[in-house]
Image 1 (cartoon, rainbow, N blue to C red):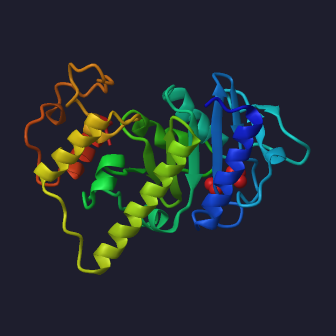
Image 2: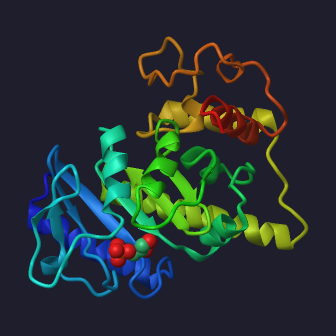
Length: 267
Ligand code: 13P
């Protein structure tokens, strides 16, 4: 279904209310954007609660984040540069969501990435959630910190700050945020209970195969080079690295893949 601009603005308000009601943002935190076409993007305004927006609040910017249209009293999110970097590097992305969900943000503050394979849905939907190094909000430090992860992931934790997710449309980007937070909450609670029971490598591989069979859109560690030579290979550039061979990595496959990706990124 093709939505018109007003419907998309209403959907941004609905998702803003949802992230607010679900404790994924406090006060005026968080921001949301949606791509209309290569040079027009809708985004939430800076400094308002995302729980109480109406369509008139929503601003329109160009590909550099400069204002194309904004009603009196509204300016685009102070984090618009972070959103624009995602769109620049990932033409397949149609929406970006930034929030501060409690558990995911607690991991981001503790500097712990979400890499333990503990439940099927998280392994299939996310694989793992790395942490982009800390950057000062509203500066180019955050877009620069996030950029290395864009090629291989659809979500990152922002160190000492929150979480960022992206996807082909707003619902996909939003659901990714829900999945990140649910995974973080389960991981946190399982640690309180003595530590999660992790999947072994074979179990993770089976789940990765299910993801590939489902043909889910977006980027995911499961796609790292196991797809070499197949139609849906996204040419991640890792062909030839040990992560690409399909040979047995360490017992914690997700951790190992994350490590390989980060190594290839020079981290
Ligand atoms: P904005 O209100 O400018 O979008 O900023 C909110 C926020 O969460 C900054 O990280």
